[in-house]
Image (cartoon, rainbow over all chains, first blue to last red; front, side, top):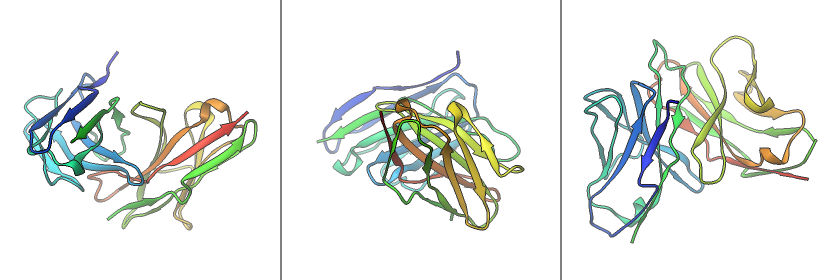
Length: 115
Length: 114
């Protein structure tokens, strides 16, 4: 069965370190997204990609970067981790159509703690 | 820009009673509306969506939602709640014209008591 996976599931790091969170999907979806979930804020979009070599900034992109070298993967990098980036991170993917009607499929999440 | 409001942080209902989780939205164009559910330590799961057509949308696990354009609302409903429905529910909106990203509400925690 097709799926979307994230690794690691839990990560503890120190302020200033570079951290990369992996996202891998086997749906063959063109669209991929990264969100962070914080209490009282719901999910907020960090970055998204509509295909290979395409990346776009979302609502809360400062301090984060992504790259899309193939269809299956969209790694999220925190260049210099800050305590404000302690959160649960979700990756999602969706099919691409003429209009944005498609629902998103979510990974299980990565809980990141920055000390 | 599009936005979503879920006015209730918490909804409590007794098993067997009907449940409603409220959602209102704001978009500049026509909306695409979605409901997702999140169980503990899991990612979000899609429940249902409104794109166009019939204002009453039926989804997974017996849930339905009614699109009301005049009230800019998309409330989630179920005629008879189950204890297993207890979870965190998110409403989300996309603007049909802009369409680039999905905006989520802050979430509503539903607790169904036996």
